[in-house]
Amino acid sequence: MCENLRENNRPPLVIIAGPTASGKSAAAVELSKRYSGSVISADSMQVYRGMDIGSAKITRDEMQGIPHYLIDILDPTDEWNVVRFQKEAKAALSDIYAKGRLPFLCGGTGFYIQSLLYDINFTEIREDTSYREELQRIAEREGPKVLHERLRLVDPASADAIPEGNVKRVIRALEYAKESGEKISSHNETEKARSAAYDALYFVLTMERARLYARINERVDRMVREGLVEEVARLKAAGLSASSVSMQGLGYKQILQYLDGTWTLEEAIEEIKIQTRHFAKRQLTWFRREEKRNSSLVWIDKDAFRDTGEMLARMEEKIREHYHI
Image (cartoon, rainbow, N blue to C red; front, side, top):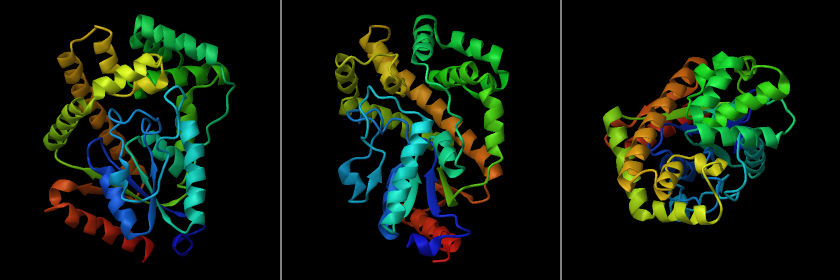
Protein backbone atom coordinates (compact mmCIF):
# COMPACT_ATOMS: atom_id res chain seq x y z
CA MET A 1 0.00 0.00 0.00
CA CYS A 2 2.76 2.46 0.95
CA GLU A 3 4.53 2.24 -2.41
CA ASN A 4 1.34 3.33 -4.12
CA LEU A 5 1.11 6.35 -1.83
CA ARG A 6 4.71 7.53 -2.24
CA GLU A 7 4.91 11.10 -3.58
CA ASN A 8 8.07 12.81 -4.83
CA ASN A 9 10.11 9.98 -3.29
CA ARG A 10 8.69 10.88 0.11
CA PRO A 11 7.03 7.96 1.91
CA PRO A 12 3.66 8.51 3.60
CA LEU A 13 3.28 9.22 7.31
CA VAL A 14 0.03 9.96 9.12
CA ILE A 15 0.57 11.88 12.36
CA ILE A 16 -2.02 11.91 15.13
CA ALA A 17 -0.98 14.45 17.72
CA GLY A 18 -2.60 16.62 20.35
CA PRO A 19 -2.55 17.38 24.06
CA THR A 20 -2.60 14.70 26.73
CA ALA A 21 -6.00 13.05 27.32
CA SER A 22 -7.36 14.09 23.91
CA GLY A 23 -7.94 10.52 22.67
CA LYS A 24 -5.01 10.15 20.25
CA SER A 25 -4.30 6.47 20.86
CA ALA A 26 -7.88 5.33 20.28
CA ALA A 27 -8.09 7.35 17.05
CA ALA A 28 -4.80 5.89 15.80
CA VAL A 29 -6.00 2.34 16.44
CA GLU A 30 -9.34 2.84 14.70
CA LEU A 31 -7.77 4.45 11.62
CA SER A 32 -5.05 1.79 11.50
CA LYS A 33 -7.75 -0.88 11.36
CA ARG A 34 -9.26 0.83 8.32
CA TYR A 35 -5.99 1.45 6.43
CA SER A 36 -3.80 -1.57 7.26
CA GLY A 37 -1.78 0.63 9.55
CA SER A 38 0.78 0.27 12.31
CA VAL A 39 1.33 2.72 15.16
CA ILE A 40 4.60 4.29 16.28
CA SER A 41 4.43 5.88 19.72
CA ALA A 42 5.86 9.41 19.95
CA ASP A 43 5.79 9.40 23.74
CA SER A 44 8.62 9.96 26.18
CA MET A 45 7.30 7.59 28.86
CA GLN A 46 5.52 4.67 27.23
CA VAL A 47 8.85 3.19 26.14
CA TYR A 48 9.49 2.03 29.72
CA ARG A 49 8.49 -1.41 30.91
CA GLY A 50 6.64 -1.42 34.21
CA MET A 51 5.63 2.23 33.96
CA ASP A 52 2.09 1.65 32.81
CA ILE A 53 -0.33 3.61 34.96
CA GLY A 54 1.44 6.97 35.20
CA SER A 55 2.23 6.98 31.47
CA ALA A 56 -1.40 6.16 30.53
CA LYS A 57 0.09 3.40 28.40
CA ILE A 58 -2.20 1.78 25.85
CA THR A 59 -3.08 -1.80 26.85
CA ARG A 60 -2.91 -4.90 24.68
CA ASP A 61 -6.70 -5.04 24.57
CA GLU A 62 -6.87 -1.39 23.48
CA MET A 63 -4.39 -2.09 20.66
CA GLN A 64 -6.97 -4.44 19.11
CA GLY A 65 -4.29 -6.40 17.31
CA ILE A 66 -2.72 -3.35 15.62
CA PRO A 67 1.11 -3.52 15.71
CA HIS A 68 2.59 -0.86 18.02
CA TYR A 69 6.21 0.24 18.08
CA LEU A 70 8.35 1.99 20.75
CA ILE A 71 6.23 0.76 23.65
CA ASP A 72 7.77 -1.36 26.44
CA ILE A 73 11.22 -1.47 24.84
CA LEU A 74 13.38 -0.13 27.71
CA ASP A 75 13.91 -0.67 31.41
CA PRO A 76 13.25 2.37 33.62
CA THR A 77 16.98 2.62 34.32
CA ASP A 78 17.68 3.24 30.62
CA GLU A 79 17.86 6.72 29.15
CA TRP A 80 15.44 7.81 26.43
CA ASN A 81 15.86 11.04 24.50
CA VAL A 82 14.95 12.59 21.18
CA VAL A 83 18.09 11.33 19.43
CA ARG A 84 17.37 7.74 20.42
CA PHE A 85 13.69 8.18 19.59
CA GLN A 86 14.53 9.34 16.07
CA LYS A 87 16.82 6.37 15.47
CA GLU A 88 14.29 3.82 16.76
CA ALA A 89 11.38 5.48 14.95
CA LYS A 90 13.25 5.33 11.63
CA ALA A 91 13.88 1.63 12.16
CA ALA A 92 10.19 1.14 12.92
CA LEU A 93 9.21 2.99 9.75
CA SER A 94 11.50 0.80 7.65
CA ASP A 95 9.83 -2.30 9.06
CA ILE A 96 6.33 -0.91 8.50
CA TYR A 97 7.06 0.12 4.91
CA ALA A 98 8.65 -3.27 4.20
CA LYS A 99 5.40 -4.92 5.28
CA GLY A 100 3.37 -2.64 3.03
CA ARG A 101 1.53 -1.03 5.93
CA LEU A 102 0.69 2.65 6.54
CA PRO A 103 2.49 4.19 9.54
CA PHE A 104 0.60 6.26 12.11
CA LEU A 105 2.87 8.32 14.35
CA CYS A 106 0.89 8.92 17.54
CA GLY A 107 1.78 11.08 20.52
CA GLY A 108 1.93 14.45 22.15
CA THR A 109 5.68 15.07 22.31
CA GLY A 110 5.99 17.71 19.62
CA PHE A 111 9.78 17.73 19.54
CA TYR A 112 9.87 13.97 18.92
CA ILE A 113 7.41 14.33 16.04
CA GLN A 114 9.40 17.22 14.61
CA SER A 115 12.67 15.30 14.84
CA LEU A 116 11.29 12.49 12.68
CA LEU A 117 9.14 14.48 10.27
CA TYR A 118 11.98 16.84 9.31
CA ASP A 119 14.79 14.33 9.84
CA ILE A 120 16.56 16.77 12.14
CA ASN A 121 20.32 16.40 12.22
CA PHE A 122 21.39 16.04 15.83
CA THR A 123 25.07 16.86 15.80
CA GLU A 124 26.87 14.16 17.66
CA ILE A 125 28.71 15.42 20.72
CA ARG A 126 30.97 13.48 23.03
CA GLU A 127 29.04 11.68 25.74
CA ASP A 128 29.94 13.15 29.13
CA THR A 129 27.92 11.31 31.72
CA SER A 130 29.87 12.87 34.59
CA TYR A 131 28.79 16.38 33.56
CA ARG A 132 25.18 15.26 33.11
CA GLU A 133 25.19 13.60 36.53
CA GLU A 134 26.66 16.75 38.05
CA LEU A 135 23.84 18.82 36.56
CA GLN A 136 21.25 16.34 37.80
CA ARG A 137 22.68 16.56 41.32
CA ILE A 138 22.50 20.35 41.19
CA ALA A 139 18.86 20.17 40.13
CA GLU A 140 18.08 17.79 42.99
CA ARG A 141 20.03 19.72 45.62
CA GLU A 142 19.38 23.33 44.62
CA GLY A 143 16.32 23.13 42.42
CA PRO A 144 15.71 23.49 38.67
CA LYS A 145 15.82 27.30 38.83
CA VAL A 146 19.58 27.25 39.40
CA LEU A 147 20.17 25.19 36.25
CA HIS A 148 17.81 27.37 34.25
CA GLU A 149 19.71 30.51 35.30
CA ARG A 150 22.96 28.84 34.24
CA LEU A 151 21.43 28.11 30.83
CA ARG A 152 20.31 31.74 30.50
CA LEU A 153 23.93 32.85 30.85
CA VAL A 154 25.17 30.67 27.96
CA ASP A 155 22.07 30.49 25.73
CA PRO A 156 19.34 33.06 26.49
CA ALA A 157 17.18 31.97 23.55
CA SER A 158 17.06 28.39 24.81
CA ALA A 159 16.26 29.61 28.31
CA ASP A 160 13.30 31.51 26.89
CA ALA A 161 12.10 28.46 24.95
CA ILE A 162 12.59 25.76 27.60
CA PRO A 163 10.42 25.85 30.75
CA GLU A 164 12.34 25.93 34.01
CA GLY A 165 10.72 22.70 35.13
CA ASN A 166 11.84 20.73 32.08
CA VAL A 167 15.12 19.70 33.67
CA LYS A 168 15.85 17.10 31.00
CA ARG A 169 15.86 19.64 28.16
CA VAL A 170 17.74 22.24 30.22
CA ILE A 171 20.48 19.69 30.89
CA ARG A 172 20.65 18.71 27.22
CA ALA A 173 21.06 22.36 26.21
CA LEU A 174 23.83 22.86 28.78
CA GLU A 175 25.55 19.67 27.60
CA TYR A 176 25.38 20.81 24.00
CA ALA A 177 26.87 24.21 24.86
CA LYS A 178 29.71 22.65 26.85
CA GLU A 179 30.67 19.97 24.34
CA SER A 180 30.14 21.82 21.05
CA GLY A 181 30.91 25.38 22.10
CA GLU A 182 27.70 26.44 20.32
CA LYS A 183 24.17 27.35 21.34
CA ILE A 184 21.63 24.62 20.81
CA SER A 185 19.08 27.33 19.95
CA SER A 186 21.19 28.37 16.92
CA HIS A 187 21.42 24.74 15.81
CA ASN A 188 17.65 24.35 16.19
CA GLU A 189 16.96 27.47 14.09
CA THR A 190 19.03 26.00 11.26
CA GLU A 191 17.13 22.74 11.49
CA LYS A 192 13.78 24.54 11.34
CA ALA A 193 14.49 25.48 7.73
CA ARG A 194 14.39 21.82 6.69
CA SER A 195 11.60 20.50 4.51
CA ALA A 196 9.56 17.50 5.62
CA ALA A 197 11.21 14.17 4.83
CA TYR A 198 7.82 12.44 4.61
CA ASP A 199 4.57 13.02 2.78
CA ALA A 200 2.79 13.66 6.04
CA LEU A 201 -0.81 14.28 6.93
CA TYR A 202 -0.65 15.90 10.35
CA PHE A 203 -3.78 15.67 12.54
CA VAL A 204 -3.98 17.53 15.85
CA LEU A 205 -6.88 16.58 18.11
CA THR A 206 -8.30 19.32 20.29
CA MET A 207 -11.40 20.26 22.25
CA GLU A 208 -12.80 23.05 24.38
CA ARG A 209 -10.27 23.89 27.12
CA ALA A 210 -12.58 23.29 30.09
CA ARG A 211 -13.57 19.87 28.74
CA LEU A 212 -9.93 18.92 28.18
CA TYR A 213 -8.99 19.97 31.72
CA ALA A 214 -11.90 17.97 33.14
CA ARG A 215 -10.68 14.90 31.21
CA ILE A 216 -7.18 15.43 32.60
CA ASN A 217 -8.46 15.68 36.17
CA GLU A 218 -10.57 12.55 35.76
CA ARG A 219 -7.64 10.66 34.24
CA VAL A 220 -5.39 11.53 37.19
CA ASP A 221 -8.03 10.35 39.65
CA ARG A 222 -8.38 7.12 37.68
CA MET A 223 -4.61 6.57 37.73
CA VAL A 224 -4.60 6.86 41.51
CA ARG A 225 -7.51 4.41 41.80
CA GLU A 226 -5.71 1.97 39.50
CA GLY A 227 -2.55 1.96 41.62
CA LEU A 228 -0.26 4.85 40.65
CA VAL A 229 1.11 5.14 44.18
CA GLU A 230 1.91 1.43 44.29
CA GLU A 231 3.56 1.62 40.86
CA VAL A 232 5.85 4.46 41.95
CA ALA A 233 6.61 2.75 45.27
CA ARG A 234 7.70 -0.38 43.38
CA LEU A 235 9.96 1.67 41.11
CA LYS A 236 11.46 3.45 44.10
CA ALA A 237 12.12 0.12 45.81
CA ALA A 238 13.91 -0.97 42.63
CA GLY A 239 16.39 1.89 43.11
CA LEU A 240 14.91 4.64 40.94
CA SER A 241 14.94 8.17 42.29
CA ALA A 242 14.06 11.73 41.33
CA SER A 243 17.34 11.96 39.41
CA SER A 244 16.39 9.05 37.10
CA VAL A 245 15.38 10.19 33.62
CA SER A 246 12.34 7.89 33.64
CA MET A 247 11.08 9.40 36.89
CA GLN A 248 10.90 12.91 35.44
CA GLY A 249 7.50 12.14 33.95
CA LEU A 250 4.36 13.81 35.22
CA GLY A 251 2.82 11.81 38.02
CA TYR A 252 5.97 9.93 38.92
CA LYS A 253 7.96 12.79 40.39
CA GLN A 254 4.98 14.12 42.35
CA ILE A 255 4.17 10.73 43.88
CA LEU A 256 7.86 10.33 44.75
CA GLN A 257 7.60 13.53 46.78
CA TYR A 258 4.60 12.07 48.57
CA LEU A 259 6.50 8.86 49.31
CA ASP A 260 9.46 10.93 50.55
CA GLY A 261 7.15 12.80 52.94
CA THR A 262 7.41 16.18 51.20
CA TRP A 263 3.71 16.33 50.29
CA THR A 264 0.52 14.69 51.42
CA LEU A 265 -1.13 12.41 48.89
CA GLU A 266 -3.84 15.01 48.29
CA GLU A 267 -1.19 17.68 47.60
CA ALA A 268 0.67 15.36 45.22
CA ILE A 269 -2.52 14.52 43.30
CA GLU A 270 -3.48 18.17 42.97
CA GLU A 271 0.03 19.03 41.76
CA ILE A 272 -0.16 16.29 39.11
CA LYS A 273 -3.43 17.78 37.84
CA ILE A 274 -2.06 21.32 37.78
CA GLN A 275 1.18 20.38 36.03
CA THR A 276 -0.61 18.14 33.52
CA ARG A 277 -2.98 20.98 32.61
CA HIS A 278 0.02 23.28 32.15
CA PHE A 279 1.67 20.62 30.00
CA ALA A 280 -1.43 20.33 27.80
CA LYS A 281 -1.41 24.10 27.32
CA ARG A 282 2.25 23.99 26.22
CA GLN A 283 1.48 21.14 23.83
CA LEU A 284 -1.25 23.17 22.16
CA THR A 285 1.11 26.15 21.85
CA TRP A 286 3.68 23.89 20.16
CA PHE A 287 1.17 22.60 17.61
CA ARG A 288 -0.08 26.12 16.85
CA ARG A 289 3.50 27.07 16.01
CA GLU A 290 3.82 23.97 13.84
CA GLU A 291 0.68 24.98 11.93
CA LYS A 292 2.52 28.05 10.62
CA ARG A 293 5.21 25.82 9.19
CA ASN A 294 3.24 22.82 7.97
CA SER A 295 0.41 23.20 5.48
CA SER A 296 -0.58 19.55 5.97
CA LEU A 297 -1.60 20.14 9.59
CA VAL A 298 -5.33 19.62 10.17
CA TRP A 299 -7.00 20.55 13.44
CA ILE A 300 -9.67 18.08 14.54
CA ASP A 301 -11.95 19.84 17.03
CA LYS A 302 -13.73 17.00 18.80
CA ASP A 303 -16.48 19.36 19.96
CA ALA A 304 -17.48 19.94 16.32
CA PHE A 305 -18.62 16.33 15.86
CA ARG A 306 -21.67 14.55 17.22
CA ASP A 307 -19.64 11.48 18.18
CA THR A 308 -16.33 9.70 17.66
CA GLY A 309 -17.62 7.91 14.56
CA GLU A 310 -18.31 11.20 12.81
CA MET A 311 -14.86 12.50 13.80
CA LEU A 312 -13.15 9.40 12.42
CA ALA A 313 -15.14 9.68 9.19
CA ARG A 314 -13.79 13.22 8.77
CA MET A 315 -10.23 12.01 9.34
CA GLU A 316 -10.76 9.19 6.84
CA GLU A 317 -11.97 11.71 4.30
CA LYS A 318 -8.80 13.76 4.79
CA ILE A 319 -6.62 10.66 4.37
CA ARG A 320 -8.34 9.74 1.13
CA GLU A 321 -8.00 13.31 -0.18
CA HIS A 322 -4.36 13.63 0.78
CA TYR A 323 -3.18 10.30 -0.59
CA HIS A 324 -5.71 10.03 -3.44
CA ILE A 325 -7.04 6.66 -2.34
